[in-house]
Image (cartoon, rainbow, N blue to C red; front, side, top):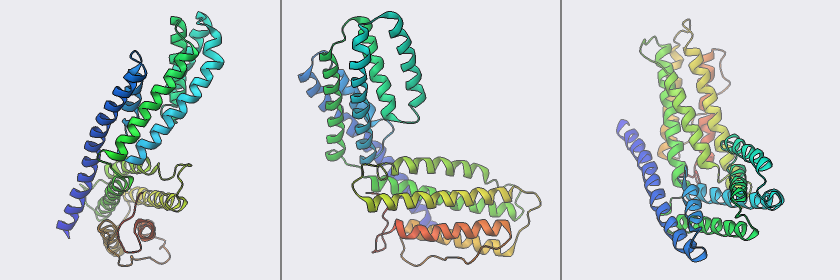
Length: 332
């Protein structure tokens, strides 16, 4: 069992590493395409296309993530150019109002960077337009060129992720979900050891690691739950997986909080429940088709209640994570 567990962990890590390497190769190929085509469109502003391609690949690790990010960049640029026609061009580089709007754009960039890539690109585009207005070179033709070069960069990124070492959303998401499930088991084991009286067991760092992994899962699954995703069945399945993983995290946090209570005592049923959690994680990560244990009503004892809730969430995860044949199905 330990050997199989190690193989699953190594396989998950290898998938993540392969995705990172593949993204680097794709970014290089996409930037090369943007460089050549961007030069043909404009010998002076070709770097806009290359920059668009490069930034589309930042913090992406799958085909779906890259395509969604490229769409958001183009959309933000289009909206920003429309604002440029309404705001930047009529100003004609007037220093005082331009300076005020530049300050507002800088604030907008930092405020929306963590919220929406589309909104961030809107502010970046408007900021560039205002600065070019101060330099006296802003014109409708320049705005059209900005849009064209951004489109070339997005096209280069799209072609790269589709035809150069494509890394599917399925492979990347599957690897991150397996790591999250392994972390769920590690959290449970540490909490159980703490309840059993171990002085060295500390589940808190595992909980922090689980939160980070779930954040990465959400980022990887984001293309599947995007409003423009034309596959409603996979969208619903992805949302179900996210909801159940959140249920697992909630039960793990509750279990760790109980384990932190110095008066909490060990129950003989606790070891059996932890073993069932381990078996459930093994079945999910190995893709086995046997039915998972679905506990009855949770007992009143807090630790067992959280463990039974965790068992239910893991049992319900079996359906959306597998194809009818029993193999894993996490992404597109």
